[in-house]
Image (cartoon, rainbow, N blue to C red; front, side, top):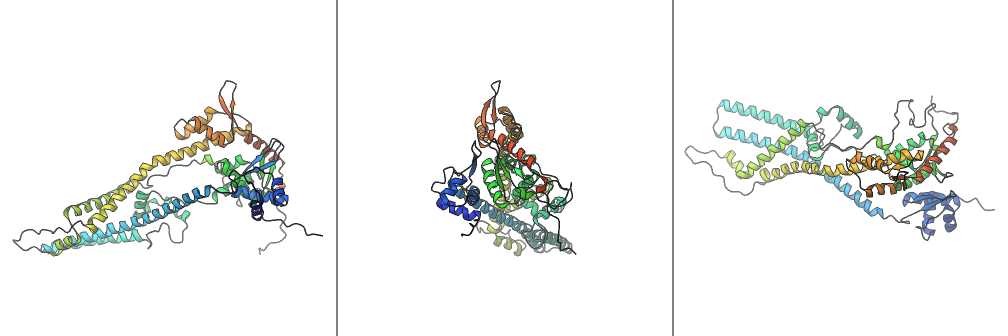
Length: 500
């Protein structure tokens, strides 16, 4: 008597399929995969779902309700090079941005402290060179005190709390720091306003789990039964990305696939419905009292907006621009007059004698430390925000295009469950509202094809579109939800607790 066959992990079953399947680009059923590999049906099914996620495969449904797995790229990942390059460029950009922010803060310290010290030395030197009176000395001491007060302020706001890369309070998380910054905008350090002026407002770090959490919340709210349209509604993902995501979720959350009478695919996650929050609706979230958490709607209900150019007030921008303009003019004068460090020292420590001609400064070449370096930095601090402003038009077009895609998706998903055709003019109006421009026929066709639509001519000859897959899916999903019982949400009676 042989032992019962051991169930393989999805990744192990997928490895067997990759090794055994000769032509992975051919459509295959679970039975095809089982016969070709020798795996049990349950292992072949788990392995195919794993591969669907890993290699961005797709699911088809036949008229008899059979599921067919399709891998357009086989078991290869041609997108990896492109995405790896994009990630590398993104990391390089972030590193350059971080270095740039550090240099800006460091330059603020150099500009405020370095120039203040030079001006103080020049004032004192000229006062003593003239053989100034007590009154002149008192004035010089007063000016010197004011300058050193400015230096102290610059040091505090630049290094507080002793890190030029500091954003929030010590021990404070990034989201808490952003919330505190919104409440107390008037207390934003000056160096941070300079950063915003040059590089724009800080962007919150992306949450890699936000999209999945939103989708899981939608699954629970929809009685654990959803279709690809629900995935697209909750996340905004294109259809070709929603398929692999569902394959991954099925592996992670004990999901199943059902096929309706009309061929609609339904993803079931009954295990996600179990909750310890008695009396709560499925979708209020984990724990907490009813009504305390607002349900998140469709992705297009939170339109993406172009961030502000600087995020500063007008006064803050003017102050930063004025400071940089002063540095620019001062460095220009230094270069025009040939005030190298040696010549400045000569002016400060050479006391002309009575009757001698004015001191003629020697030609020591281009002033580097006091002229060229601050001049280049000051020009760059003006050019960077100007370049960002010039690129905003391109960013705005890209954002408008994405909002137009979501607007078209909204119109399609709103009508598909009612089996209503979508007029061409409705899609054009949605695109026009998002971008302010009329779409081309090519753009509308691309969106319709992405969603699996077909052209349908109306009774008056008008062009409209039908989305048979989404219509069948909506019908199948609704039937499965009606059959889903509330007992899936209940947990058993507590028989033990560690509470005192």
